[in-house]
Length: 291
Image 1 (cartoon, rainbow, N blue to C red):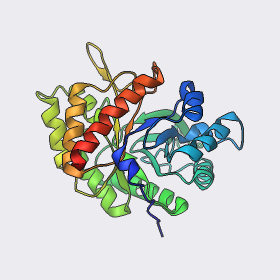
Image 2 (image 1 turned 90 degrees about the horizontal axis):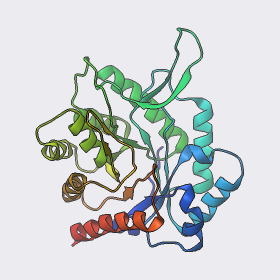
Image 3 (image 1 turned 45 degrees about the horizontal axis):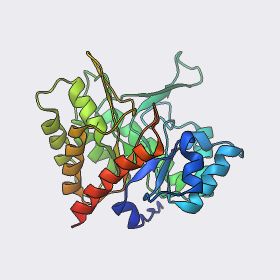
Image 4 (image 1 turned 135 degrees about the vertical axis):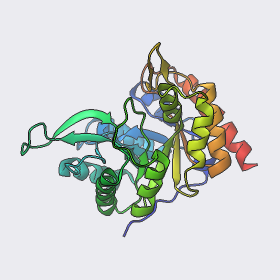
């Protein structure tokens, strides 16, 4: 049986931030007014050490969300048993607010019959029934092991597959319906994909994606900045949230209500005050939708 984690009301009213190493001391010594903090699960798989000690201290001050990048949920090779063991141990140590990973491929064999290797990247998957079956099986295995709901994030993808037969919102909705998992809606990824697809109106495209999702499946929202180069847009999480992404976020809140929201900033990490300023903008929008 999967146990759904309770989400304290404060986490729906006050945005969270990604807890990154440059901010460890400030966040622990003078805890800011944030709803929760989120960390990358794989950074805390060791049995001890300074990083895990910091996470325990953070857990005493905030709800903690565990966001993974290595489960490879869309891989036909299945879930790496070692990886799942370590995640399960970390969940039992921290009892996190949320646990999430990505709808991606990252694990497989280069030569048939050889042991699987990990690509160390979030590679896109095809949106069809065969891939959906693989993804559902892997998500169900993780949820059965953790005994809780997993949130699965939509990906920023830089290619698509000729054998796509399902629209991405339909694909994600079917995943949630068949497994009971939730969706981590990354609004920034919607904008990145729309820009790279060269759609005429990226904001309208993102709104349509949001409107195509069923109510009740979104368990968390991610916001971040992207890097716009002449020929491609990169989801680098290295700048402030762009105006169009804020528009899509407001649309998502109008559709889904107040949802735990995280500001991601992973490259060119700014002073903590800048990150908190972005979180405050999300909190202000959460307050408006509450009213």
